[in-house]
Image (cartoon, rainbow, N blue to C red):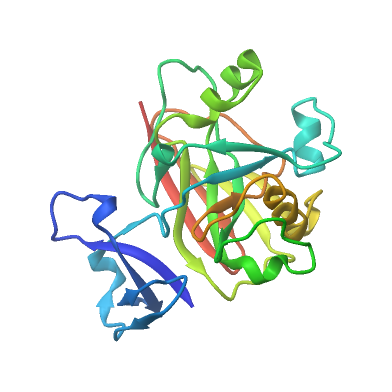
Length: 258
């Protein structure tokens, strides 16, 4: 099932916090009433998705990200592959959805895209084992971990480089039945291929990531895990269009502006 959060285009102003949950059947959406991570009921899918403004498909308490989880990406930035997952956080204020602008901040002269598979957590968990990790996965979505590369290098720690408003794009929906074991992740900028790799190339797989992260902090329903980016990251300029696509899952598109 595909889960979305939406507001009708006729409602003004657009406020993501006013979006409601829905489910998609082909190109139509029906409202979900109740708790998508618990008990709910689905209304008939009859609203054409083209008549809706889609928000980010969940409201995470935490946005967890994994650095250097593809060997070739670690190499392209001159880094060693970590011996254990390298995790960091992005603030919820950085979230944007499909179609919204990535805004280039004046503090950086080198903002880059990072195409990623994103895991959405479905139930509360702490000290989850790798064997039980799949029980905690609600579904998957597509992400772009926008990064101010120059600030990442100069600061040493990554909070500022990863945390600007508009630096966390994910969506446009959550697929609860997606098979993430071997899916091709690509990124194109203005139609030109920049990144391409399979999720099978991850250094640490999804079960390992969930187990490791939950040994540090409790995972809550709706939390998201950005699982790392393949090689090929590159600079974004004013006026660019960046498309992140995951085979069998969909496409996330964002224009870029200053």
